[in-house]
Image 1 (cartoon, rainbow, N blue to C red):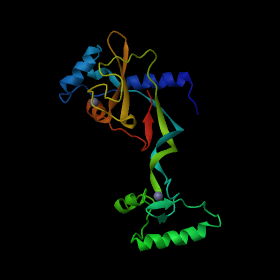
Image 2 (cartoon, rainbow, N blue to C red; image 1 turned 90 degrees about the vertical axis):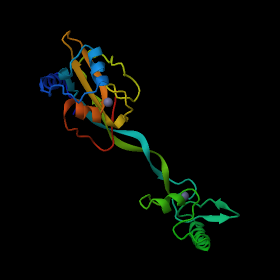
Image 3 (cartoon, helix red, strand yellow; image 1 turned 180 degrees about the horizontal axis):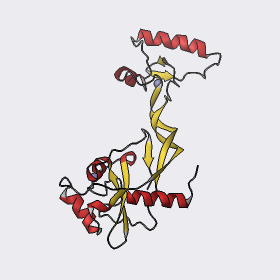
Image 4 (cartoon, rainbow, N blue to C red; image 1 turned 180 degrees about the vertical axis):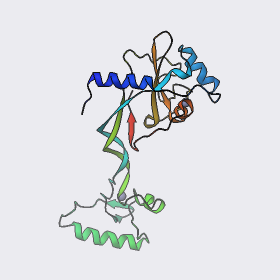
Amino acid sequence: MAKTSAQLDAEIKEALRQPTKPANASHSAKALTTIENMGTLPSQWRLTPIDWIEEEREIPGMVTCPTCHGSKYVRIEDGRVIPPPSLNSKDSFDYGNAARKDAHRAGKKYGNCPTCAKSKSGWGLIPQGKIKGIVRAKVMIGYPKFPPSTKFDSRFFGGLHCNLCNKLIMKSHRVPVHATGDDGVTHGMFIGEDCAKKFFDIKLRREKDSIVES
Ligand SMILES: [Zn+2]
Ligand SMILES: [Zn+2]
């Protein structure tokens, strides 16, 4: 599936040929100053092609609750949780029955785990026995294919800020763009989706769980 460098060069050349709409009055003075500082014109900027590759990453998600190990009910004695025995062990059945009684006695028929029961009552969609944590999951990682020797010299380069307007953006919502000025120097930026839409007047398609690498 990997593309040859000749194919990538061809893609980049093609991207450079794509016409973009000329600058319009909606560009803020801030954005115009940013691109002027790099010796470029708004009409010289292009979307940078992205190679999308599925990779396993650690991302925020739901993990099994460490208190109840995912069971709906826990045994509570003197206000403390008695850890549930491992599933399928011989004590598991008795523990489950006793825990259910404890929960009903306390009037918590939808679960009585002190760690995860709260989110159950507030958020109907959160699965029982789960809490927010870090999970390993397959996500789409985008590798921008900037032309060789692209300079990242926007005055707002670095961090998670839009390199055009300096607004904070998410890693998953940034768009790589580049421009070659009249002096032949190519400049690259990561900008926010809002700026990309306004700046280039384009529609962006993006996977739900995706990250664009720098
Ligand atoms: Zn729990
Ligand atoms: Zn911006």
